[in-house]
Amino acid sequence: MSRERHSVFGALVVVFATVLITVGFVVVALIVGPDIQAVLVRAVLVTLVIFLVILFLRYFALLWFAYLGHAERNVLGVNKHHEMPAISVIVPAYNEGELMERALASLMELDYPEYEIVVVDDGSTDDTLERAVRWEGRRGPVEVKVVTKRNGGKASALNAGIAASKHPFILCMDADSYLEPKTLLRAIEHFGDPSVGAVAGNVKVENRGKIITRLQALEYIEGLNMPRRAQGFVAAVNIVPGPVGMFRREALEEIGGYETDTFAEDADLTLKMISAGWRVVYEDAAIAWSEAPERWIDLVQQRYRWTRGILQAIRKRKGLFLKPFPDFPLWISTIQLGFEALVWPVMNIFAHLFFAIVALLFGAGELIVYWIILLTLLDLVAALVTVSMEEESLSLVPMALIYRFVFILFLDVVKTFATIEELFKLDMGWGKLQRVAGTQ
Amino acid sequence: MNIIDILVTIVVVTILVTIILAVVTYVAYKLRLAREPSSLDRSEDGLRYFVSYSPSGTSDPDVTAEGHATEA
Image 1 (cartoon, each protein chain N blue to C red):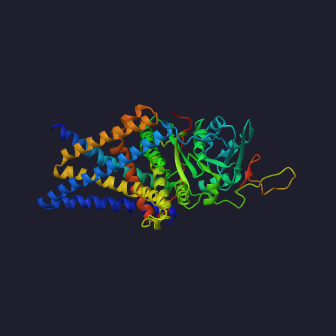
Image 2 (image 1 turned 120 degrees about the vertical axis):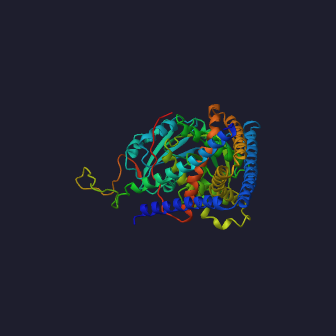
Image 3 (image 1 turned 90 degrees about the vertical axis):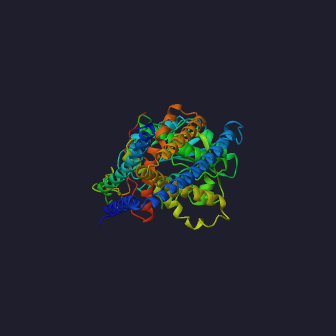
């Protein structure tokens, strides 16, 4: 059996087993007597309360620390550093022909005195290399280099770009993203602190014309950037995002650069950096605009890779789970990643499914409705706060009405299947998302 | 049917339909992945059918890219 068929077969087994267990639960619930059914309803109540407590604690902690991070930078104006050392911008690309030139055009407009651009063609089979070579050379203060290599994945492309670069600070980005003019200026400010090894930037969704992309836009603000803002307050951001991350060359060299054994090289590198004692902070004004998947099947592909990649990065450090010391920051970061990727999606699905089935079978519907209303209100408030902190469009806030019970639930199902596949080490590949260049 | 019953129906249907659609989309993604062609085997210099021609009249097997790009 080919590797791809092996993976599909394994995935179908996973789906079938999950459906079987769910149906089995429903059948058992139907055939047990009324006493057992009463126990099940009470179990719903207890589960609901526990779930709500965890949810509220999580939201409160994230929002509070995110606000402290926001206040520290934007209100008190601490940690501003005004030297502007030269920066190398690394752009790894594989078959990004349509979007490559837009990325390079944005890099020409950066508001920064000295930087170079290193484009790494990772063995593209389209015209990516030809398009990049047209930009090669010196253009005013900016030097553009192009490097080509045999296809080896994003991590190896980034390492090749770092090796070909020359400046003491490195910004790694994606070829399908573009940076705002002040991104380098804002990110470099944090490196005045010699213990800072990396700065995570702010990734925003560019294409917001469809409901699916507007939901992702809200997710990036509330679900990705808000936690990063909270983690940044304690200088322990656990993922420096691929579209925009700036690094101190010394830190990258100390940890040996990117490793090629996971599909989430950004998470893996960040954990290595934290483990080496470097502080990893967040800068909300270092902005990269990225194109989000516009089809649900492409979204599945993206999140499937993210989940398995993160779990691969965690698996490399599985010995840490029972050892909070001596590397406590790394332990916290790994536990948090594991909780968000592994535990929370399963809890979320279980809670929703459990409540839906019990509501259908045992008439606990009124309880469920009040719970839904409460959570929706929480989501609306969280959306309003986070959208305001990022000075984003308030038109995204109404998306919170379907954010949790449609979008997040959908993603949690995908994450759960990806987790099960990773646990059984089924084969996977990068795949290639279909792009729609230049859409808004 | 009162408002609570209507809301319960909407909530339960939404949850179940979302989960089912997620499962279906996941299966569709895996099937799409299985139908994608596997990577072509490439020769050592990355060329499959052609050998690059250089003006000196001899073939240059070290040339693998256009322009002045450096090979990593």
